[in-house]
Each structure stands twice: as C-alpha cells, then as structure tokens.
Image (cartoon, rainbow, N blue to C red; front, side, top):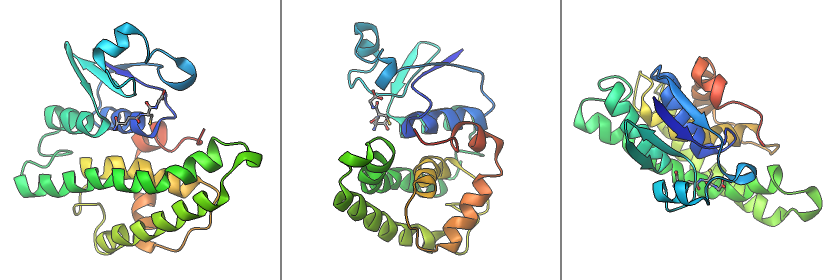
Length: 205
Ligand SMILES: N[C@@H](CCC(=O)N[C@@H](CS)C(=O)NCC(=O)O)C(=O)O
C-alpha cells in the first residue's frame, strides 16, 4: 500500500494527501516532522536526505518533493483526468504547480508570524510585507481565474492542488484580504470537494 510520511498540518504534506484522496487511493499516513520527529532518523534520511516532509513509498519506489509526488500520483492513477493527457494542457497545469512555490515564499512570514509565533514575538513589518506581496501575486491568479472555473479550464486538475493548499492559508489567516472575486469563486468550488475539506481545509496550526 502507498505510504505517506508527514504531519497533517504541513502545507506540502496536504498536497500529497489531497492528490491521494482525489484519486481514491488507499494509503497509510505516518506522522513525521516537527513535534513528531522521525525525519532525522537514519531510516528516514536514507529515504529523504533533506529531512523534510512529505515522502512517499509506492511499491518500493521512494519519492520526495510534494509537487513531484502530486505529478507522479496523478500521472499513474489519473491520466487524462487529474493529469491532462495533452502535452500543452499538462504544461499549463504544471506551470501553476511551480508557481505555487512563488506564492508560498511570499506567504511564509505571514503564516509563520501569525500562526506559529506567539503575539509578543511577532515581526509585524515582515508579516505586512508578506501580506502585501501575496496580495500582489494573487492579482496574477485572479486574472487567470476571471473566466475559468479552475486553473487550466473547466475541469479540476493537478494544477489546482498545490496552489489550492497555499491559498487555503491565505484565506484562513487573520489578515485583511483585498477582494478577488475569481479567486474566491474558485476557492468556494474547491470547498465543495470532499477531499479538500477532509485534508486541506482544516484549522491552521
Ligand atoms: N520543496 C519541499 C519542501 C518540503 C518542506 O519544506 N516541508 C516542511 C513542511 S511544509 C518540513 O518538512 N518542515 C520540517 C518539519 O516538518 O519537521 C516539498 O515541497 O516537498
């Protein structure tokens, strides 16, 4: 059975879990990272020398890097659906997957500052810079979603998964959010997917 190592509150672990859930895969999740440790053990380091989560093992094949895991699972189990079969449509989805890390970088100070740092230690300047940089990036997403239901068109694909996890953090942190009607409508659509509500849209910790 597919194994997925990683704590459920990690944005990058959520991507692997969401893909597995959308694909209806049976999997075993093993807690790892932060308070659970595990990632510094020799066994784990032999699978993932970065000492980070997520890592998966599928029939003896070990893989790390969350977006690559999503690509792999979708290509293996969802070709022509979650993984577009057409090369250009697939590249379009993959472009948004990679862009999700651009957005993650902008959001880092916001998420860590407001969710994982006690109020007296917060760097409010860094939080505001991250918020404003993230809002600027969302203008790009908004332009793409103005006339589309999902990132690459009418259908949900793997292109929606990484950025869906990143935008969930933006939507749930206590900040001022400019109005982005296209992004909001897309996020509401994601909220109708049982897999999203099960493993992604859980309280931020
Ligand atoms: N690019 C890597 C980044 C992985 C990463 O930074 N994971 C974080 C959690 S989101 C981590 O392992 N942090 C240390 C920990 O949880 O102990 C990926 O997408 O898989």
